Length: 184
Image (cartoon, rainbow, N blue to C red; front, side, top):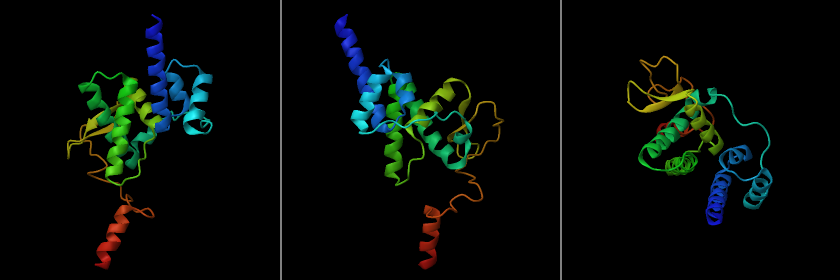
């Protein structure tokens, strides 16, 4: 019995460390482990070398619906859903693995990741609560994050029909490509 609790505690510590390294907020650690607040605080300071950020966690589904965050959230959630269906991972372990794969994909495309692990965790909680779902785009067939009760019969994703101002910001990749083409 004692060995089981030591193994369980060790697993909890490993999860907490993985989440801390990915940048999770302390509230996520408290929610996903059985470790005490004081223990998590010490562990956080040991791993990160600083105190954790303070403040409330993101609580609105609206952030996930805006153009670029929606694309990043959809990428993460598709990875998470795949892992959830094809593996025996516990939910938090699937979130950790899906987030690591999300980071790997954004880095491979030389894209700045917009989704933090805390937002990714919150996204899964919104899906669990039935507030958010994945909806297929009627043009490309990809599945994108939408509100559960949104009318989605003819849903078109932000990749097939980006907003008019998409990519017009300073330093955007699209602007850089247009500039290179104009110079050629």
